[in-house]
Length: 366
Image (cartoon, rainbow, N blue to C red; front, side, top):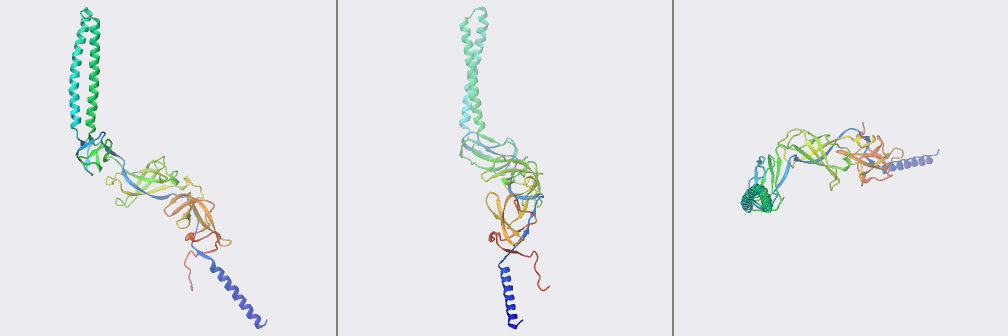
């Protein structure tokens, strides 16, 4: 082989090597992870708010001007204690007038009763006529009806007086006061919020519709209340609403197990829902970490699967069936053990050639 021919072969080999290196450099390196099935119970954190299980909004049953406000926010009250009172001058006057009218009606009733009994005895001996006896009987019935009518009016007047006095329905504490002295208020206008002293602490959360069939009443969960305890507190799911709210979520109530008198209503709480994916998902449910998917509509996400044969990516649509603090749980045409891109998926495309970054740092000149 001539010297010139040897130089041409060396240059051709170098050119091919450069082309191969350039082709390798065109492939985008990606972070990756292997898809794993997820069948174990997991904890889903959801924010909630504490409240007392026994609470009520108190209001007057009648309108009027507030004369007295006897309690304030934070005051402890006993059952039957007067909290506030409306001006009662006109109502008390009405009660007094009707009481006087009732006494007069009873006096007339008594007179007519005596007249009726006397004529009843005399008619036997023929001393009075049948017509006179029937007239006395009719007058007695009229007097009885009048007494009943005045008694009913008097009871209504007394009720209006009672409606002007607001009392505590049970022992507890005042959490809100919404009225002031000399204020004119309407009937059933909110006056106080009261929390019962015998009530237990509850936590209210809103369950997303994707979890409504995973959580059951009487199931056990954990609650974290900042400032109260660093350890999770056991809680029992006591209620789950059957209708959805405006946010496509269902209101649920958890009752904290134990006696925590120091917990106030309105505190922020974090509920760790204990869910089992197997209740609603097939055994092929997959865990997809955050950053490895693109969100779409109707609980659909997209991931990029790595094809080992040609080192390209193909997008795969999955359906989200549950949420997890580190990712989502989904089902779809993906198998455990397959490789997906785990970061930077918004910069990837279907059919793109990629290379997998090493899962461990590379060592040069070992």
